[in-house]
Image (spheres, rainbow, N blue to C red):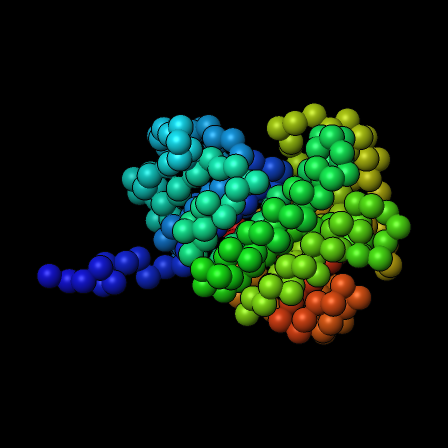
Length: 275
């Protein structure tokens, strides 16, 4: 009889955090179409609907003591991965350390101070949770960590939002992954599940101005959330490599990022076609 190792799917495995957000929803949809992944684990604070990004026809159940909305195998005929969605308490991620034994971790966690309710709550979602996930993943043997922050991220910024984004970049970079990719999109375009009037107004103003934003202003040009998601998958698979100059850096930055960290500025998130 063959041993267990011979029965394992040789394809890559991934873990996604923030799959219910604007970028995360597109990311999960893209991963489900990616035949090079055999399994995708999703950690979510709330259950994903069966008609949502987990995929059509998915069924599962919520368990009280060990809450997990588990989606089984991919739909018939789909060459993409099976998806397991676990509804967890992010304040107790260490209780789910066994789920972090994957190849690639995609972190799309993010909130607003208004939604979080306070600066401390915002830091917990945008800094503490990603850092804890990075540490758990590295301890479990994960090789790649891909993180979405924002244009202007800088730990020395006077703007609280940008400062926290810069701090999480430096903290995650210090965990020591063989490869870390940080994407810094500008204003994200796309349909959101939640109402954010301020961002709607900004999108209405910035969308027509985007093509006019060139040179130093190009990094502030709005970018479709779907493009950010595609860029994450492509870079995890090694389809994109750091380019000299431009917005991609493979050298230390003010945030203390190591040579193993690639930073992709908003103006460089320009991928064509499907991931």
